[in-house]
Length: 98
Image 1: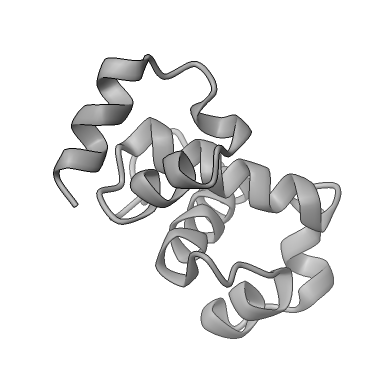
Image 2 (image 1 turned 30 degrees about the vertical axis):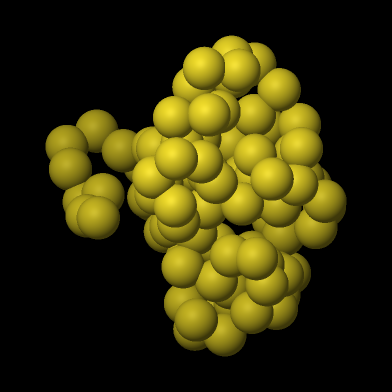
C-alpha cells in the first residue's frame, strides 16, 4: 500500500510503513525485524510506538482495521484483545474462510 498522499506528515507515513511491515512479518513482529525490513534503526521504529508491546498491539489493531486476510484469523484463534469487539458471527465467518 502506498501512503505518499497529500496531507500525511513524514512521521505519519513512516508509522504507516511500520504497520504494513508488521503485517508482512506477522506473527514474528519485533521492532528489530521491522527495522531491518525498512532499513531503519530499532530505536527509530520504537520512536513511533512507546514500547515493543504497543508496537505489536498497533500492528494487530491495524490488521483488524484493514481486514488483513492472513492476520485476522490468527488473532481470532489466539483470542487477541484486538478482536475482542468482534462478534461471534464475524469470528465464525473469518474462520470459515481459512
